[in-house]
Length: 228
Length: 228
DNA sequence: CGACTGATTATTGTCAACAGTTGACAATAA
DNA sequence: TTATTGTCAACTGTTGACAATAATCAGTCG
Image 1 (cartoon, rainbow over the protein chains, first blue to last red):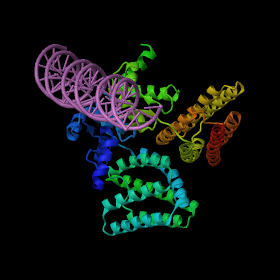
Image 2 (image 1 turned 180 degrees about the vertical axis):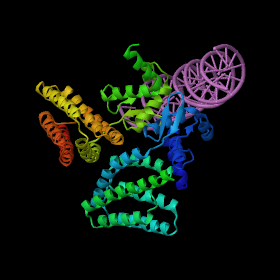
Image 3 (image 1 turned 135 degrees about the vertical axis):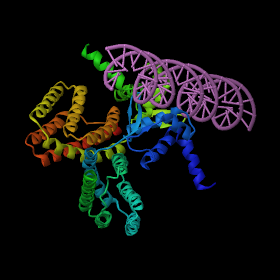
Image 4 (image 1 turned 30 degrees about the vertical axis):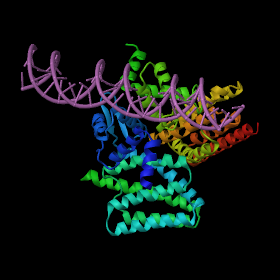
């Protein structure tokens, strides 16, 4: 049996319909197919996914708990919007988590992990050369995902992902990263270098600074946006 | 119109049934009425709350997202159990969040806030004198809740609460805090002292250390438990 | 006596229908 | 003309019923 079919089977066997629907809606939001602030029509989604409204509602309740949507009674659920102030709050927390991540990754680094980090960085440089914003962004996500995974703390991963998903909403408003790709990737390289040297303190500091600078870039983009 | 009736009206108008049910089940779990690892019967809860199973299921899906329960397909949802290893992971994250909280509280402290913190500490001392474990614990929760609120960052509050709720499950297994009440409260006082002096760095350090020591107490309790 | 097989029962998964609420628009009156 | 009330369609909130699955137990066979 093909690998893909097997995993698909496992997926449908272990995850129930609401769970499947949940990730599907998540994708819809994160890909921007459901716009920020837009109301989500339950029946519409139901026919789209070929289910009844029950599973849709359960999925939406889960997404509400993970702060991707908000719900107003008798009015419906809306794709959550995020303000600069909220993004700032997220960055406050993200900075300390990133510091912890940097430390832990440096403690637990292996040659193989180092190679995969390097590989992503190389791809990001290539994307920068091509001015390929989209690829760069998804590689950037992948890079940070790998880092938090390599930190080896499931709860940390969970907290971090939950937090940064809020920032993804922000990006959909076109307000993230004022274009500093090349800059951002040199910061990445510095982090990986410290990790390679197993300099835990420095790796933590650098990753924290990277988050801080990324926040600054966001502010810059927001300011530019608002004055236009 | 009486104040109580008005708020009750607002409650039922703004919060839907699933939301109400959710906090209700939460209480059931946190009070230990639903034991760790126990399966939760949907129909049973439905008759208990006088609703149908729909709202119950939606509430459970939300609780699953906040990691208070886990769900197995076609078998039901279970009150989540937590291992020492998982608790350790939580403490890893909690320590850095507590440090951030300490800093922020010290930055934003007001005389009034200081008074309310002091009041809780006094109550905790009284509970210690009475050997009133239960009161001490709920006051302890209140104290830390106040701190994170005073930090003035909603996302931080959210992350912190989500995280520490996992530890509450742990306590239900009787594995938290190896009895060091008096010790714990002197640590609290030291934190508040630093906050009163607006010594942001020290407040952060002390609160972080408090978390670390609290983790150590947990380990001690767990070790004692396992050798019996 | 224990392991296996099949029926039985309890429980979850899903659905379709009904009830209640909201927002928009038309009708009415000041 | 403007404000208010009445009406309606769309949608959400909730329910009860049915289907599918897993656990339980009785009976049979080795």
